[in-house]
Length: 410
Image (tube, rainbow, N blue to C red; front, side, top):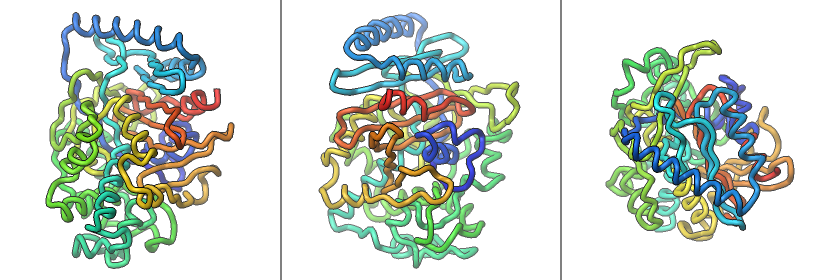
């Protein structure tokens, strides 16, 4: 998800945690990659097993309101919706629609999908681990780690801090908002440019060609450029790419085997479905395109990762319970800033982590992501005892906020 305080477009205000994470979803651009084909027989067998598991799981606890919202998303045009809930009754898997419009294959509980801006929480966690090790400081300037990179059109890395990158108060322009870039990676240029490799320096240079939104620290504006720079800092500090550090520090210790930072690999690991988009068209009758296959470097450290619902829940639960960060660093991550005018009350953004108080009074933490052909979100209570992770395989319709409210508020 990508959060911003200017008005959302493409119906975004409907689509994420009842307002704020919607805007976040709109500008995150980890486009979806291709499913690896599996045989019809194996898919049918897996779907059958998933159906049995879901029935057994549903019997242990009622999530009828959540299932109704998944069904509603499909009625609204989402090809397929998938959700996994954990609470005191155990695990519940819900699904509606299909993973593949051509074959009719159902969505499976262990389907993998591109998680877009949920990547930001992983990157922020690595940087906070490095701070705990004394290898950098949150109040270090960007210039001290990336000399000369944040310069031009009013941008000045000498007065932007690492903390301001992570909580989106840097004012740095969001490279995804460059109109020509957006046309290439999300609009009518997508078929031609879907395999292009984008270097972090290219994406940062795009941002530098525009003026900043405000002086560092003077406001909040969700910008994917912040996390492109954060990934570059990880590599400068450690000598290894951000994806390697995420693997070493988070994925391997937590045994998150369905999660990866794919680099330039356009493929999706098995099992996975397809991803669908109307390529920014506002026409309700516009053609639906299969956008599964693409090069994830267009999002890099701001949103390129792949995971499944179980892994995502395990990661956020471990994070909130202090398994990945010392208390000081976790406290810094959960120290939220206001999202500004135009965002409903009850939201705050920390360091790669969003907080919301739902209308029923439940406080949830997590993040969301919006990519070409995919909408994803994770939300959980502070103690991690109740959580939901879910995905829609479309980017033009579906109300993710209603799914979250249905699960936590009924």
